[in-house]
Image (cartoon, rainbow, N blue to C red; front, side, top):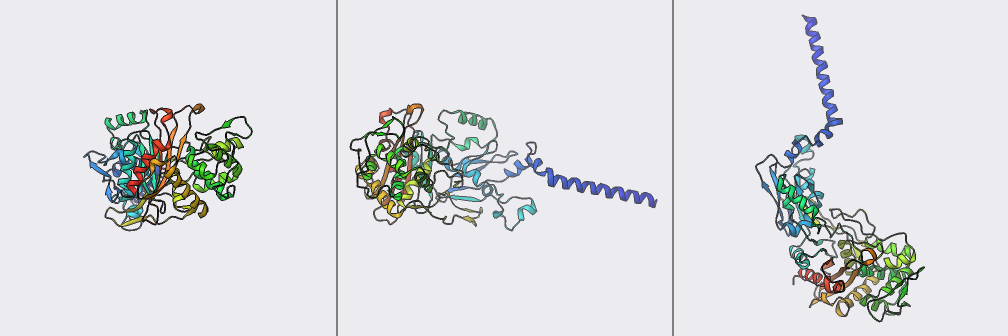
Length: 485
């Protein structure tokens, strides 16, 4: 009997050891695979078992959650979905998350350890905290002005507070309602098919995920490079620029849309957007100087996040002189997001330095206790303060008596730069209309806003497209909203 009991005890011990080994193997080697398996619905059930946290604009939620009573209980809802879609993105039970919903998913879903009452609490209990809140830097009035200004036309607007880097508006048009994608039923699937196949690409965030040739708006960068390098020492002196300008190493000639560009000063060339002057200046600054200047402004930065990922704006680092000449007027392979070009305007407005753009002011628990507060990020010196002072005056000249008079605001100091960017095979496409600008109330010390607008008006006549005529009025409306007009 004793022998039988002993054998039974040994067998039980071996079975226990086998169970422990199997459990350890599951935890260490296959646990993650099982958790992520499409056949395992427990993770999804847990994720949607509670309301998702809120995204706030001006302290008010623009998102919510709806109790469906189904297995995946809570679906995401959106207030003014098309207006804020370029900020929030979508949170779908079927298609995942994008933009801020993705970048701040840990806080919004309750999985972020910073939401727990004690360190490691959720890991020990296997639970999840209530969803936290994400307060954005967006200003509702500025966002609305940008959205209404585009009026459904294909394009985008980005607006920044120059001294802080806060993103005040982020609009992409045409837009969509992210709430249509929230559930798992046939309605969500149908909406997905419709939106992903739509000719206007409403789910493309043109403000931060689409790059365009910036055209003459890029001349701000070229002017800064020429002034900083000493290629131009007097903005009112002749620049020794022929009209037309023959691209180096070729027989192709570059011309202008206006008179008076031959040997024009930097100030005149900037005010009236003389291509020949800026193409020649870019070549004289040289490839290394132009690349360094563009990168100081933020071009070629592949790691920018706000915290949503931003597509890199690019200035080619390997070109011949003819290509460099075209790149210096915002053509050839030069590409920029509207957010990048808003940052260019902000650098001028802020005296030559910028802060990285940011979309989140703070994150909190559901009850309002701080989890993360957006402290002031470091400044990046873009150009000499003296250069910025010259550029501020030249941008004011554009608005007061140049190509950007449609952006003028009574009682405010406004600077701007127009751009009409060619694109398509042989530049056959309808040009993109650009306008970048900044505004300061005459009684204020600091500028209130820097704006970039791009309009892709495919229905317009080619000759009717211009940065001053098409994009500047949109920028003016955005600046007025930021100034509280």
